Each structure stands twice: as C-alpha cells, then as structure tokens.
Image 1 (cartoon, rainbow, N blue to C red):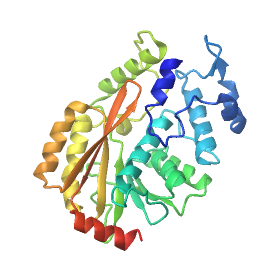
Image 2 (image 1 turned 90 degrees about the vertical axis):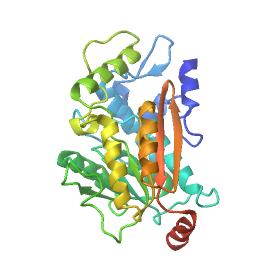
Image 3 (image 1 turned 30 degrees about the horizontal axis):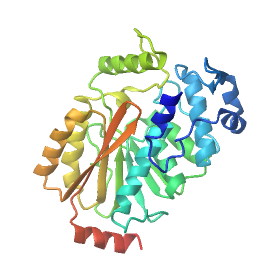
Image 4 (image 1 turned 180 degrees about the vertical axis):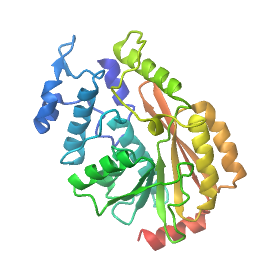
Length: 316
C-alpha cells in the first residue's frame, strides 16, 4: 500500500488522483461501482483491476466525481483509458502553454486543441475542457469510436466545446482535416504503440501479470482496445514519423505539436527528424506513474516573435 501511495505522488502536482481512491465517495456518486468494491488482504477497499467491468465503472466514477461529468461509457472491447495518466498529459500540456504566458495557464474557450485519435472515450477533450475550459476538435478513423465519443460529448452537454470529425484517409494524420485558416494552440496525440496484434497481446499479458503478481499466459481485456488504438504499421515509430512529416505542412496552423512517446529508445530518432525539419524549439517532458515512464515530445515551428504575436492575437 505504501508503494501505491509513492506511485501516486509521482503524478502531476495538480492531479486530482495523487491520494488513494476514496471508494466510499466514488460508490456514492456512481452506485454501480458498489458491485465491484471489496476489501483486499490489507482490509482496504479496492476493485479488481483485472476485471474490465470494474475498471470501466471506476473510470466512470472518477470522471463524475472529479470532472463533473454526468455519465460516460465506451463500447465493449474498446480502449478503457487510465484516468490519472490521461489527466497528467493535460496538466503537462497546460504547463507547456503557460511558458508562453508568463507561467500563467491560459484557460477558457480562446484555447483550441486538436486531439488526434480521440477514441471512443473522448478522454482528453473531456478532461481538458473540465480542467481548463479549452475547446477541442477530436479526430478518429473509426466511425464506431466517433459515435461512442459523440454520445459522451452529447450526454454531458459539451457539443459547443468539443467537436468530433472523421479522418477518412487512414494513411493520413492532418491532411484532409485542416484549412489554412484553422489555428490550434495544441495538438495532442496518444498514438498506437505496437506494430502488430501479437505485440499488443504480449504487452497486455505483461501488464496483467504485474496486476496479478503472477505470470499470465493469455491476454485479457480489462483495458480493452481495438486495432487502430493499439497497433499500426511500425508502431509508434512509424506513426510519429508520419506525424512529424505532416506537421511541417501545417506548421503555421499549430502553436505546439505534442505526442505521447512510450518507448524512450525511439526519442533520438524523433529528435533527429525534428532537427531535419528545422523546428525552432523542441521539448521533452517526462511523466512518471510508478514504474511506467512516458514522455511528451513537443515541438513548434514558430519562433519566439511569431509565438508572441500568436498569443497576443488569440489569447488576449
């Protein structure tokens, strides 16, 4: 239990998840969670994180309690995101924007963000809007995912703040979605990390072996995930390579591009590509959640003068 507490303290200082889950309060706001809450061997209340329905119900409770959502759901077998980690991305992205604004986090609907691969959960737009009042455009190549995401937007009355759009070209990231007049302060992206279904299955088994503290030989669906959510050709390496390539074409449409990097060994490749594209500034932000370490790779093509003009024209 002490180890769990130490893990939570590694979350962003503004995270609402740095303390132990208050399962009593979470079950009060979402009575369905009561079916999954039980005492562990330490006589503490918890849920079985190996149970997909329990994880989904816990996520719903967390979103209702901390982010004032009315309801939230995803279709069966779609990716069920860990809320603390997703919130950390939003908070570190807010810190990035604050560096352009005398360390004051810009809030409200003057801030426009694009979430690449928003998924059925629509998790980044929902948390980003709840925490900072930002507007979002969420994109995805999966019509079923977008339909579920739209339901999460509509049921929480966020249609004015969150707009979803289908990327019809599965080989593209930005192309076909942007006009010259579109401007976004942030691009967020949690790319598919794996290069194949087999690699994703092995990762799932490792994750669940850690949860159960014993070797698991069959992948489970406690966190779910569809093909485009978990893997693509060449994994995150190929996806981010494409993202960097396309970002050059839309360098004036974005103040900052950001993407989540799971494999630290890939970073030197990404930095080299960005250097070749002659970006004006690159930043790597490390995020820790227990033994798991991920990174935000951030870049901008705009120089400091251009960024100041951007901020004065759009934020103030």
